[in-house]
Length: 171
Image (cartoon, rainbow, N blue to C red; front, side, top):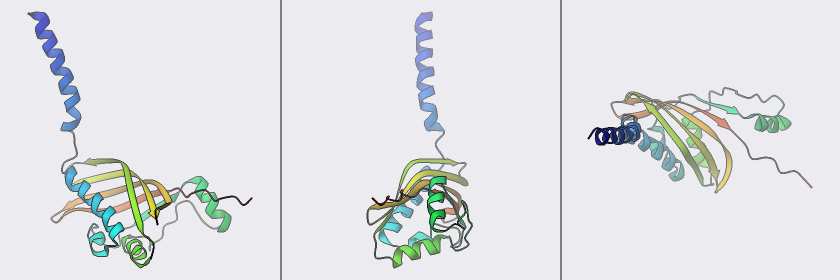
């Protein structure tokens, strides 16, 4: 009888150990994932209004940082380029306006999405790939800081690394 109770306790402990990660899911993860999907589809559909509605305010700062090889590639043409230059014009409005004005198709894909939230604030990180006419123009890691407002989750800031495709060498 004691061995059976010990076996039952062991089985229960394993079951709880594997069930535990589900119990730690971010509060309202579905709401946060809905913002990620709206971000993605607003780019594809060139939907400026829906895109800008994802942010607390339209001029929230975006900060990019070039990975080292990409920085060297940019500096070959523009020696004054720096790794993490702040540009006040790098924000949601400029981004979506550029997409809407372009005749190219645009898409941003996301993978390895990770969400950490207490239900009111959240960090979202993922690997991204930005496509123009189906071709990757840059990729890297993207990080969002979000807050839950009366009208749902909103992005308050965004930072991302930039990896550029290598320049083709002339023969």
